[in-house]
Length: 439
Image (cartoon, rainbow, N blue to C red; front, side):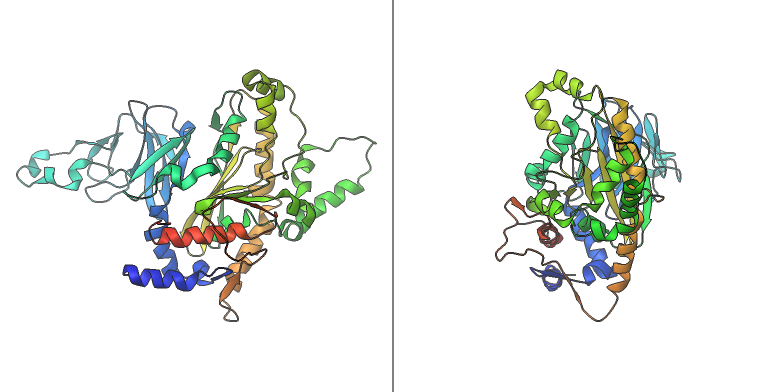
């Protein structure tokens, strides 16, 4: 597709208050995203605590491109294409492992240092005089265009040229900062494997849902609503404390006014978060010893500032969400126009009581697991939407709530918590990065 044709196609899909259904359903649009959108964005790869030792690696992907993240012998992390330069075979297929001092292709035994450099080729004399040294294959495993380790979170941009890490994220990095700063040691560690959950819907539906505050009290009435009703009707002694499970699930049934007053903040390039003033995580009970550890680490004023920030969901465009107060990251991995794998990771706060990690794990199981109470409500809505969008009754999806003429997505905005501005912000970024990322 020529640049002019791509521009025309993208312009046809995105309007200020609505988007064409093809952005969710069309295989052609999905392939354009794989070719243009994901390579031009900074996309999350993994956390450096997943590769603590030399030779440790994980596999990941940006769009449809298979990658691996590995810790080299100098302790530096590298992000490489998971593809042998000889015949294209994937070098590793496990989610994680330790390769030792080098990678060895399972097909023809070409081997590579953990920084990607070609190490050895069996029967190398067979290439003498062929000009192998002038080819890309001689350079070893290909590196991504750029990578950055930000406070343990590793991001990469496939395109060799494009927007810088700092310009792409800007002030939105404050949400990652807050999550890391909640550790008395200023460090996070991935706590176990993620919960993985397959969804038969487009990846953007999941991303949009993270800042959709008009659905919880409706879609989750059958789960959270039932739990709240049972708790309220239970006979219990006066003054019985609310158990952690109820603290987690009950806020999903908060009224519209709660979410309106919660507020939303949008940043340039498709990033944004709910919970400017308060959130569903604001009223969890204290964990003994944690506040004291934070005061010792930061001083009382700074500790109060860190813990007083209770952002709900922070979306980092294009496809992750983090929850700072509950130390969680969800990765929405596209596998097709109507197929998305969701990975829900949790983190331990180094130097903090283990009860915090236990609460985070409980939240993840209750809300995001394939066996969860709440996650199935969302899945039902996503799949109904994916099916409904195949209807020829209407071609466009409405994202008009609290729309204002002349919205400028290059500026940070703080608004009513039920606005759909963040969805419009994401599609503004979608359009620009499909076309290379120029403002």
